[in-house]
Length: 343
Image 1: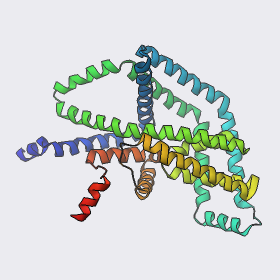
Image 2: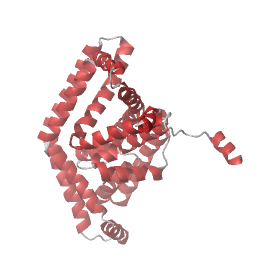
Image 3: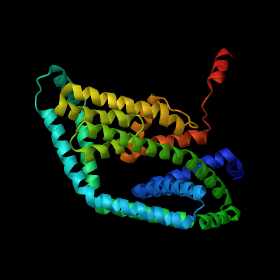
């Protein structure tokens, strides 16, 4: 018994045990993962926006929160009413167009080779599953709409009573569960500073990529523009891999409507937008974070998608960055690396 008490007293062991308990609790709440993640994302992003507005213009915080949520809910409602039927129709047309591309033989031998390669590696199956998921996701409006509504309400109440919630939660610091509170506070702070920041950066990058790509597709007179814009936005939330995945349907549609010339334009557009992301947005938004090698990025995405599905592709990298922060993994400066090699 004394040995167990000594292990518990040690901060490292206690932190690992409590982290394991939190992890098991989250796994047991797997069916609620949509609400949990959406609530956190809404709360974090809206809190950042509210703080930005109140600090800049010295506005009343509750009024700003209410105004922002009214705008958000109104925008989501109008988008659902006006664009949901359009999205469903265009996604269906997009799937049919991609299937027609695969099923019909082409005069160009190189294109036939590409189609054969895609079929042999089951890439067309993954694309079809992705579009089918997107169609099902937006047509099953009752379930998704309820989850979004609950998340919006929870995040709204959190922001309106943020100070009261903090004051009430501080009471646990002197309670019988103080040991748990200290570690949960530590993990929460780290989670907000890593997971929250990375998610925020991913959203900004995805929105910028979506706007630039949609503008380019509109100039090139692409069909199913709404569905393609939505696809680019969703895939833009997936680091690195999202750009590669979105290239496949975009180049196929480009070849179908304009041949190799339009494919070249699409590749050029994607390269320019990716360069803007890599050399302008990423350094500005992620300057204080450890930059992951591409190999690590894909490994994390593969495992996180296997265990958490579509959400794993979006939150896999932020969660991994959070774990690196907890483990104390820091980026080594070039000068330090050189000295280490010399020694």
